[in-house]
Image 1 (cartoon, helix red, strand yellow):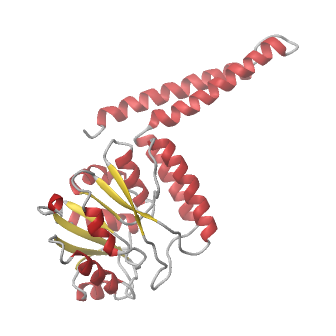
Image 2: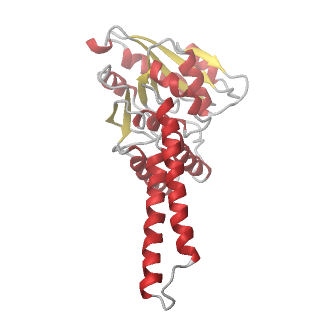
Length: 294
């Protein structure tokens, strides 16, 4: 506990039409934080709800910041990070799916780690098999991109050092994939990231805003953006190697075993494309290295 005794903690809860659960979540967070010596605030960012989310959250004891228009879960998180008074930000969802009692355990890993994530031990929600398949495939690609083991890429329960996250606000999208971007931004830039197992529960009220098809494409787009922004050489280098290898194998076949015993136009195209993609990757990696956060 001494590691965060001098830190002020902001517990950030983005919310949109969560009047049924927000009071319980705020009260559960307050209960979890009390008795541990933390200095903290509970900040609810209401993303222009059409119900009484803002007033219920305020009545439960949270500080409330409200968007004038609905901007998305990621935008609410960006607002909360900017408005939060703490030098450590803890985030969790407003639907009661995460256990606030995990927060004190996560905070024990500061300041040794820069980001601590609650890795969910189960999957909930509709179309469970589709969600698990999509998230697993995207998580595998993210692990290839970062070179790190990622138990849970898109967990909504995470804690991080605010000064570091402020450097990456520009890359955070407005939608659900914001949390995945936060994880990848830290992993691909060499920051210390920790995953701790945490329980995950079904929603305690309201309706899930996750769309299994549309949001899956958003997750894929997020990972591709991260590949371009933070680790271009790993992605472009892999594609370059595949094209060059295919070009060399095809050229050898056409020259030694084909009846014409000569190279085809497609051989030259494959090899040249592989070289070009590799050069683009090197150039992109140089640009990224120059702007990398120390």
